[in-house]
Length: 411
Image 1 (cartoon, rainbow, N blue to C red):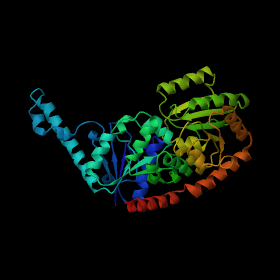
Image 2 (image 1 turned 135 degrees about the vertical axis):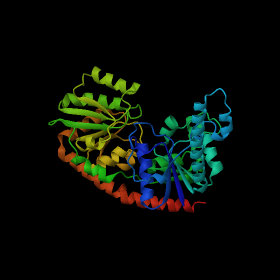
Image 3 (image 1 turned 120 degrees about the vertical axis):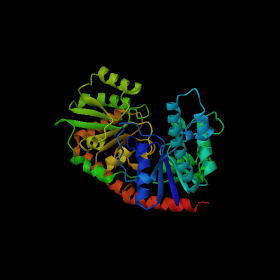
Image 4 (image 1 turned 90 degrees about the vertical axis):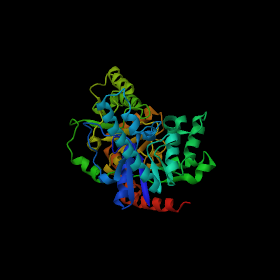
């Protein structure tokens, strides 16, 4: 069985990209015939992402699957006959045409041979139609998030063959275009299935894992924090859905009772409008010496490993990679009880889960753990045990093999 994974790039700069790379590398390690197709071209000076996938298993997705048109809309003869362009420009355009044509042909051949295609890319309706014309493979959407997140952020009319008025209607039609939907959490799959009877048999759940060796080695890396401080860390790109502004409000209250505490925000997009607003808020609250924005950190695990508590105030998540990594490294977790997170962690057993929006409750919970180390150790040990039970790499690998077997038997 040939398997294609279609994704933006080979990277761990976000949870979605990490889960795509995890799936690809694990399938390859399990000796499956897997190929990864990426749409983002390399740029000069770009850091090369480390991956266990060999180069012959990685190819490019043609630009025409994201834009209108194809290289077949023109020809070398037309380019050469363009008298308005200089000879040098015509030669350059010919070389570009040949490169694009080779990319299209390579991708087309893979599509024709594929049995399973995983869409991590969120293709438009026209791109899906192109794929369907060339391939008889089952098309699987990686649904790493709650249905309401897809409704609000990811599903637009461009993803549908016909526009739909409401976000709920768009979401249902979007899901119907796939043969299967791959979820990371049972509660999110159940939420999808109840929305339309046609979706019930499309939902499949695999609990994700993480890079265990890197997580466990992180504590051996240098401590980035000052001594004698109680460190809270929040990891995730700075954006409204991650709601780091809520973390600031929680910390402002907490800091009055725990002046030795610091909050460190790890994640990119610090120069966006939202990121700049966060910086301004830190200054307005007078917290410049206690709250720090570090931007994207390649070694973010080091910042987690030497912290005292992970806090997460996201409005929505899939099954947060950072949560799983915290479970494995036994970092105590305080989070809002949102879909995905609440299916992984048991409140007051593996973590302290607070009702979304209860800022006073979150501040109180963090303060309690900072001042009761035995309680913090108890929940972190329980989270570690739960990780081993549900999210270990061995369990994840077994689930992938079972999924491929199941998908192969679906008519």
